[in-house]
Length: 224
Image 1 (cartoon, helix red, strand yellow):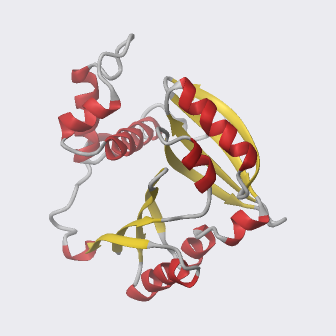
Image 2: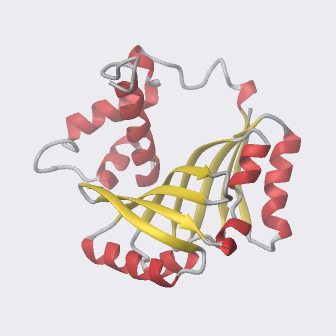
């Protein structure tokens, strides 16, 4: 797989994020319905004032038709967003699916959208990149790596299916007090402890927790 890291001046939620410069948004998933709707689940990190500014931006954002605040977890909020026709027209997600890509990390701030995405071929990656260029969107390719060349030396899986880096993040979160009540370590401090960005620490921690839950406490029959 080819792993690309890009920073894009992406139109979706641009107005919302510019209205709330302290907010960090993390994409969770997208759903494309048979009726042509495009819904997104996103986590939003910010203070109460920043969340209020984010919601005010949603009310006037031309790319969002409807928004619903789902749940709060500490200073993180989960939103379900439905895109307008303008939003759908500028969404790269259908291209990712068509090209067999895997979104490994997607975050956004008022400075733009950060994508880390894996593609099965050079051609698929080129078409993904062309999507932005054809719409005159600024793209900064930060990193490009062929993971096939580093498969033997990359991050390996440890017990319960979590990677070694995810395990390191989980252990550091406990040791630093990120999971304490009250919390004695912020996400930014956890990132500093791991020598990675706050966004990367959040993504690594969440993926590790999800994998750990799925491989331990989840039942094989998830309907139970």
